[in-house]
Image (cartoon, rainbow, N blue to C red; front, side, top):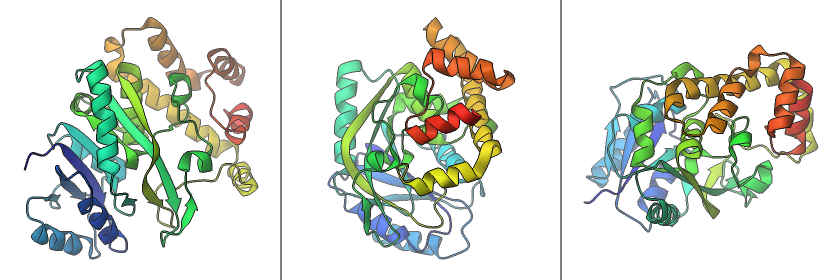
Length: 314
């Protein structure tokens, strides 16, 4: 089989939902893919279920189970990126369900961007997704409308707010190469966030403007989809308070600082370099300096609630 797409799947105690996800992968209209699984030390039946699929579909699965464990989701994906070779890579969560044309539509967009710009630059493609409850009952057709986040990504906004959902992402081989460096692991918030920064600074980001999957919202989600227009969301964000929000802002600044330390010498645009470098050092500055930087450089989160938090506590 000519493997075009490597599906990277991170698992941990996912016995409740993993079968539905694997069925949705195997039911894709585009079949030139292989599934690479890093299990992070599951102690339930996750590995037993995966092995049963491996025996039923020989050649479709590669399982890493005796390797590094307890990495967490983000670093499980980065671990896989360092060990798998393919023209294209997709990130896959254990508890979601992919719609049948997800790979086809995403790859189609990727190939159109490579045809236009070439395959020697890092390219990332992501899509909208539908939000569902634990039983796959629909909550929202569009994650972007539900969470009140922008589809169009600009660097000023991306530095403070990630609009790329990892479970919808495809990256090309050129972008994968950027993960093979010595990375500032402690400063990377999430693998998809880091990939989005790489694509925005050095390459291109494409968007499939339709839902390609069901994002299952349940109690064990590591991140979760939030309805940013719901007053309850505002209440909980205010309740979390200044320290929690400030910590998130500092983490985004440290991530950008780590990005500049890693790739700074390769950034051609002086304006882009200075924007990133200044934001990366912003947590050393006083509040007035920070607010002035946000305003003058349009470094603002999307959504009224998020903007309010940023002005109050950023």
